[in-house]
Structures are given as C-alpha cells and as structure tokens.
Image (tube, rainbow over all chains, first blue to last red; front, side):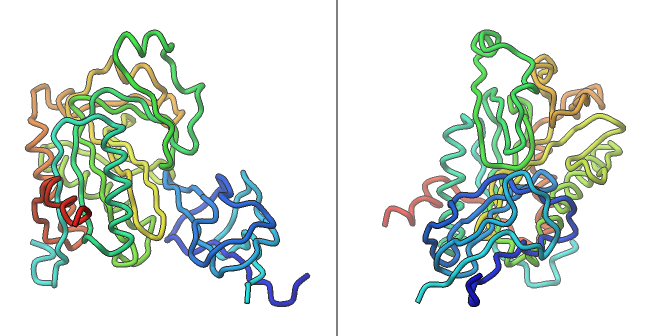
Length: 82
Length: 233
C-alpha cells in the first residue's frame, strides 16, 4: 500500500442513514483532478456527488456500486500527484 | 416574518409558467453551473410541466405501469435523470420547484435542505386548511397515507438542482401510470382534498414565502433574459 495515499471519505451530509453508492464516475487507475466529481451516492431521495479530495491517481475503489456506507466511511483511495 | 430581522441573503425567483421538462432540465444545468461558479445567488425556479415521467437514480422500469403506446397516445415523454429517488410524474396542475442552492451557505446539511422543502410545503398546506406531515424514511409530504408532494434532489459541488413537486390539481389518470417511489402509495392533490379549485399561482406565492423564511432569503423576481444575460456578455 502506498504510504501517502489519501482516503476518499463520505462527507457528513446531515442526519442521514443508509447512504448507498450509486455509481463511480471514474475508474480505478485513472488520473483525477482535485474537486472533480468522483462518484454518486444516494440517500433520502438525494443524489450527492462526492468530489475528489486531492488530484492524483484513483488507486482503489473501496465501496463498490450498491454498497452502503456510514458517515466518514472510506469510499476509495487516491495517490496524490506531484 | 421569521427571517426579516436577520441579514437575509438575496436570492432570485424565476417563474417559467408552463414549460417542457427537457428544456427546463437544460436550464437547471446551466444555472447550476453558474451557481457553482458564484455567478448567481441562490435561484428558485417554479414551473408547471407538460406531462412527463422521469426516473431518478433508484428508478426501476418495473414501476412504470403504462406501455410505450399508452404514453405516446397521452403525449407523455420519459426521461432518465440524475436526481435521487425512483419514478415520478410531472404534469399540468402540479407546482414544481427547483431550488438551485449552494448548501455551503446553508450549513452543508443535505438532510436539513430536504427537511426545509418539506416543512415549507407543510406550512403552505396548513394555510390552505390541510393537515400534512413528513414521514421518517419516506421523503416527501403526506396527507394521511397519501402523497401530496414528491422530492428528488441532486447535489454536486454542494449546489443543488431538481427539487420538489406539489400536486395542486393533477390528472389522477396520469398518476395511475406509475408506482411513485416504487411504493404502492396513492397520490392526492390539494383540489381533491378541498373539493374546490385552487389556483396554482396562489399556492406558488405562499410556498415561496415559506421557503424564503426557511432559507433566510430575500427573494427577488427575475426573468430568463435577466438571469441568462450575464452568460452572454
């Protein structure tokens, strides 16, 4: 595991339960820019697009499509560029 | 006036009257981009759509009960869209509200935003003499077990689009073509409950006041030319 990888965490969306991963907009191995739309999660009739916390390579998708994630849960990992 | 003593934020109200869904969706996406870029304050779009059925990100085609030929005969278009939720119907007699709102200025609270829409709607219905409520785990607004307002939101860059649809006087035959939210629930309109016609514009004006209180807005009417004018220059 790359020692400087950054976790992509599910942001605090308010008191919601059962946040489901709808789809990843980028694939593992792709280069992403900071704040770029990375994946969609859904809860309470709301689709929320999680942005990339840093620019770099999306090295791992931890929460696959259909997975349920808790607040602060790890969705994936980015190895920052530069 | 709950919010008037505080420094209310300037926000815009764009009333589209009657408009096609696809055209309005493009407009929402344009304004969403402008809101993200800080080129406009929060905007509340109100519109009455021509008949359309839309599927959200949890949409299942099993919840569409009408056949393609029935839809064509009724002139109903079908769209797959990015909002949360399952299938829904929009059409004449329904007040649709699309708030393009930067949640970073509203506590970054997605649940709070949805609740604000629901509560403003409940207060609007109270004004009309209708008792309505929220139900935990079932977003939207309910009168007993019947759904009077549906919610489906999309948030990217903490800016919202899509929103809410309140049934003022909707053709029940059109609702029978879908299973809203995939649940075997009945829908109801304000006019069914009151046994008389209520003007959509009147409901809209009350709802806008309630939304302004909830979200601390000083709402200012705008026009398409005005709001898109800045984009051309």
